[in-house]
Amino acid sequence: MKVITKRPKELSDAEIAAWRRLRDANNAYRSPYFTYEFAQAVGEAVDDARILIGYDQGEPSAFLGVQGVIAGYARPIGGPLSDFHAPIYDHRRDFDFEAFMSGAGIGVYAYRFAPASVGCMAASTDQRLGSHTIDLSEGAEAYEAERRASKPNLFKALPRKTRKLERELGELRFVLDDRSQDAFEIMVQWKSEQYVRTGHFNAFELAWPRAVLENIWRSDTPELKGLLSTLYAGDRLIAAHFGMVGGAVWHYWFPVYEFSLSKYSAGHVMMMQMVEACEAMGVNEIQLGAGDTRHKLEFANMQIPILWGRASAPSMTSHAIKFAHGLESAFAKLPAASIADAPGRLFRKLDRMLEFRVN
Image 1 (cartoon, rainbow, N blue to C red):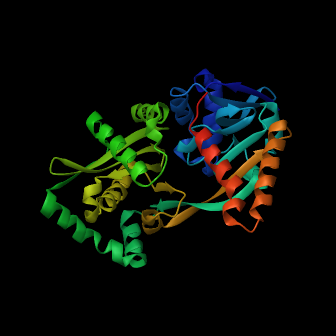
Image 2: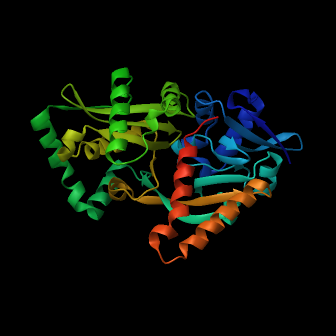
C-alpha cells in the first residue's frame, strides 16, 4: 500500500468520494466525526491537520485524519475535541495498520475513542470503555417510557420541573437551530466558566477550538450540520447545546446552562426537547460520548464499545514511548504513593498540554 499525506482541503473529488463510500458502507463510522466535512472544518482552523490516504492498485482505500504530529507521534484530527476516531477502510479486506502508519512516517498513533468494531485497533488497546448513547430507533415515546421505568426519580419529575421553570421564569421556548451570534457567544462564555469552575483546562482560551466550532456551525450539508440549540424562558437564555448532526446521528458535544439556575435542571429539560426534535430531523441516535457523568448515565440507554490505546509502528518514537511507560510501570510498584504516581502524573499532564498544541 502506498500512503500519501495531504491537507484536508487538498483532497481530490475522487478521494472525497472514496472516503464517503467507505464511511457509508460501515455503521462503525456513522459518527459525524468520521465525515470529510469534520476534517475540513478542523483543517480550516489549524495548520497541522493532515489526512493520510492509503492507495491500493491506484485507488484510495484507507483514510486517517491526524493532527499535531511531532517526531512521528500523531493524535486524531481535532485532538481533544474528537470523541470518535479510527482509520476508515473496507473491513472486508485485510488492512495492515502498522504498515499504513509506517508508510506515512508515523511511529505512534495515540487514540482514546476508537469504535471497537474497527478491528485493526484491537491489538494496541490499553482500555475498553463505553460511549453513552441515546437510542431512539423505537421512537421518542418508547424511549421516554423506558427511561421512566429505569430512572423514575428523574423522568417522572421532569414535567414538574418544566412547569416550575415556566411558572417562575417565563414561558419556555426551544430553538432547535439558533443562528444568533449572541447565543453562540454566551454558550462559549458559559462553557469556559464551567471549565474553570470544575478545574478542567479551558479549551476556549485557545483560538483554534473555537474556530473549529464556528466552521462546523457554518456547515449545512447532508453529511455534517452544526447545530446550536437553545432554551429560553421568556426572553432569557437559560440553556444551550452546540453539537453536530450527520445523517441519522446527533453528536452531543458542548452542553451548558446558566449556573445560577442549576436548581431548575434546565439542562435536563433541554435534553428532552432535543430528544423530541429528533424524529422530524430523521435522527435516531444521540451520541453522548464517553465518561460516566450523571446526565449521561441518566439519559443513555445504550453504549457503543470503544477502545483507548496507542498503535505503534517500528520507530525511534515508538521505542521512546515504550521506555517511558516502562518507567511509569516501574515507579507504580514503589510503596510511596506520591512517588509511585509521579511519572504518570507528569506524562498525563504533558500529554494533555500537547493535545491542545498546534504546529
